Length: 186
Image (cartoon, rainbow, N blue to C red; front, side, top):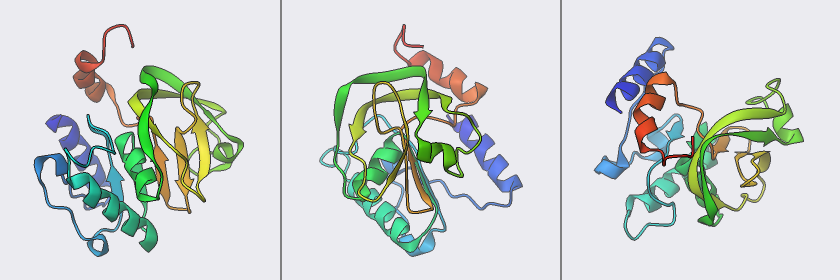
């Protein structure tokens, strides 16, 4: 919600980051790749393959591809990971079932050695909220899997990461999400 966003922007500002939020689902303008120092692309209630209903997805994938080519840092979370995979030439599609609720991910050997996850252990807690999945981008390194879906985290190059699971919920976020998660899944 709005309070979560304000909290995150305040925290980023304290760290010296100049953050600009674009809500493409609310028709905010997509920035040019050469005006972006880095991207964090979050989730949404639609599929990365639903360009007919959500035309901004095509432009968002183009921005992601351009940012990766420029070597800008990119983090895709949930739908953002799916869009990053799609921008890198992969197929995103409905999976064999919804993975929703608290669970875990198992780090691959590469994941255990990756700077993002190093020294965190082999299995990490995660919050899942997706039913779609994707193929691993050619040249990407698989970092983590869950029992339901193999593609849970990947790195492309040294600065682009896709995380199918959520890492951002704090107590306030969870309080806002709790009533939207299907009953019996958390």
